[in-house]
Image (tube, rainbow, N blue to C red):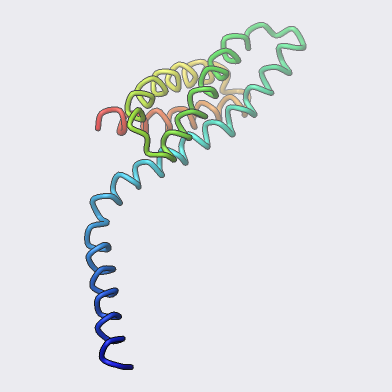
Length: 140
């Protein structure tokens, strides 16, 4: 390797080292966003299953599932947006996290009333986990 190539290589290595040293501060925020993405994604997946279950029971005349279906629908809209903003690390993420935290709390409360139904139990647990992650972002 020629001296010029070696100096170029060392310059690139030094720049990479500097970038890696600066990364921990960014990394902690990125980890919080990644955790929120995972939690909101889990909420959306389990919420869609729960909502389908609610619709099925509503179709049979079980009106007790109406409030659950409404709270899940609200949660789905907010958690979908939350996941998108968390992926973008958007400036409005903390504000939406506060709103989503409330919606997830209401959804959890409704789903807990129907814990005998497995989809509702799963949705309630996912909402509790997502609300906890939202709390961290909203208060940051």
